[in-house]
Length: 121
Length: 335
Image (cartoon, rainbow over all chains, first blue to last red; front, side, top):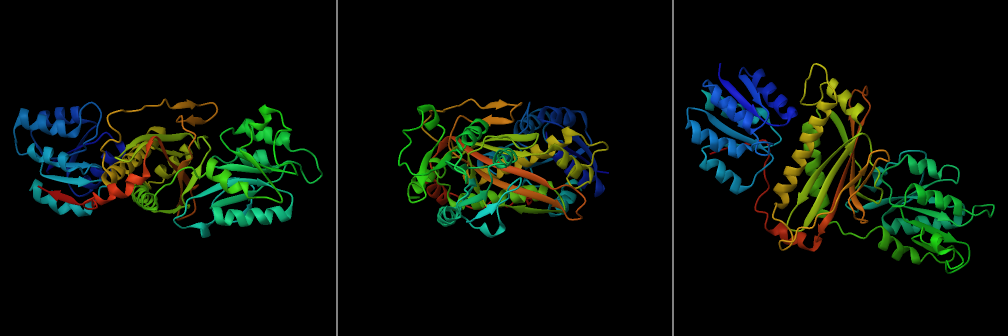
């Protein structure tokens, strides 16, 4: 079963996204900020996909992505940003760090489910 | 608008739904002919008047948190002075301008100077003409572009619908508020900034009603034992989504030329009072979320916009031209 990590400081978002993905047959872990997310990605070689917010305390999502790529390389982990942000320069920064996609909140599960299935195989 | 009867918390009438920004005022007037004249004035001035009596004015004042001002007569129907009542209103809510109908004098010099200060101004039964200038000076001091109000209301509704499932949501017409009283126990504050404005968005609600909705599994949370932290979480994410929508609509480029003004925000918990250091009226949107089954108490959310740090609405139209495309939410953009 594909492992997915949801990184968001909002309990409400973690609950919504992880609940939706679990209900669709995925194994889901959660992290409360970028620092927690980085630690969990480093500690779990089975992760296939990460959903990450941008604005989070302690470490923001884009910094987390850059650290994952710098410290771990690709290692088969796809990253999608799930955020209220839609700023083009932020998207460019994410692309440069190798993210695979960008979703502007609010999360609409059915719209992204097919793409997620393709991404995690 | 008209003059409506008041008994408790005041809601704006449905038929006032349009793009005009209105203002709620209390009216203590015993003379029916003056009431009729005020009604006509309010109709042309975007004021919604709520008729009160001498014996319930302060109670109704205290059961509302979103008023703009008070109209009061100098004497009651028996000729007894209402000055004591006006002083009570001022002591309770010094933020609210009081418009006094004098019996005959065209000035206030017969009042001690300290007493004169509690009134925004006066008018006469035979001459209501000062009211236009008075309400422009004390209530409608800010222009909020219709397009801005429409967009922010629409995006906020989208965020509320996303946060609360299967709820019937109604929103009152936009209105301005002079009150600085906090509604409920729960509020969030988000800084807002664009090239033409800077300030805050404040959301206010009641904890118990939001908690009951979480328990009924009508939010994105499904905790085993819901508590106030889950309420905070739902409210936090709602605030975050509206902030994001604002940023996507208007950008985040700072206003001004490098000079960033900051003003302390003062909160007095005992008085349920918050001040942003500005006397300008706040733009308010009031949402009511009702359970379609009718088993839960409605959630009331007050959304207030306080652009206390910078406000240049004349630059709003200019900034709109720069918006390239609307951001579609919920869609996956693949790279």
